[in-house]
Length: 112
Length: 114
Image (cartoon, rainbow over all chains, first blue to last red; front, side, top):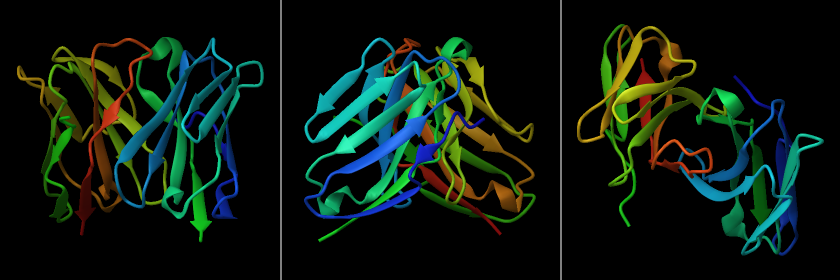
């Protein structure tokens, strides 16, 4: 079942700008992960943030997690045309197991 | 580094036919997950296996079954295919059932049911 919503559903920006995507979830979690998917291709793991962490960085990516608001954000700085893809957040199922529950995703389009 | 291998990459079937999708996890990974992603949809968890035993079950139809073999590869068997089964099927693998383990996804099998 769907865990939450991602916001916005679609985002169009120019190269060099920053892109921020938000994700909300419903149940308590142990971790939240962000994945990237190029059109019709596989899912590439970007970053995992644990429930006891508030912020994590990886290269041009910055992820925040607010467990009190049950939300997370993914910031991509200095975007490039190659960042064009769909971005999904995924949470674990809490007590129910380790399967991932994905949000609906944000489609990012970066134009040069 | 070796990645998750899925075969076939593309599959076209007729309604009511059967299909078998295969997944070969990263070496030494003992946990396999299956996900289904319909057109324009988010991936939905189907089923997972840990050490050759079914671990978690999601929204897998009764027409589908899966298993994990002694070499840890997994097969998803789909019978009485319906048009709505057309989707991208992903397999992911991880080591152990630690809640912080990253799941590594394969490239997917695109199933088209005509």
